[in-house]
Image (tube, rainbow, N blue to C red; front, side, top):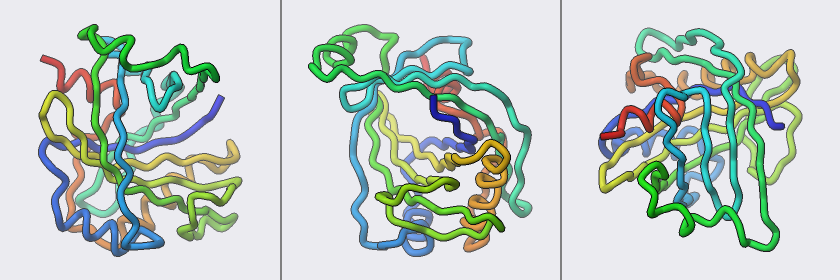
Length: 207
C-alpha cells in the first residue's frame, strides 16, 4: 500500500494561461517540458467520497481516504483541505483485465481526459525544498501538478499536491512543498469550497 497526504482544488473551465505560465516558469525544472496527456476511467460511487477506483494504463487503482487532516492555509488567498490516502495497484501482465473498453458502455464509469504538467520535489530533513527529475528515488518528497480535465466535453482544471515519505514527516512534506510553491505567486486564490479529491469531484459533475 502506498500512503500519501494530499491537497487538491478543482475549478470549472480551462486552466488560466497566466497560471500555466507561472507553473512552467517557477515550478518546473525544465520550463519547456511538454505536458503529459492520458485518459483515466473512474468508477462513480455516489455518497462514497472516501473511495476512489479508476482504470489507468492497463491497471486498476484503488484509493481509500484514511483520514481528514484539517485545513491548511497559505497566505490570505489559498486554503485547502488536507487528506491522507492509501492506494493499492492491481496489474494484469496479460493485459486481459482492467481495459477501459470493457466498462465504458456503463454510465457509472466516467472517462476523464487529462493534460497535465507535473513536478517532483525533494524534501530534506530541515524541510527545505528542491525540484528534482521524476526519475530520482526519494525517501521524502511531494509531487505537484496542474491539469486540464475534460469530461463529457466539459472543461475543468485542477492543481494538486501529493506528499509521501516517512510517517513522521509526510504531513510536513506536504505543507512545506505547498508553502514553497505558493510563495512564488499568491495572486491565484484557491478556495476551501473547491478543495476536495476526485471522488467528490465526480459527485460535483454528475448530472
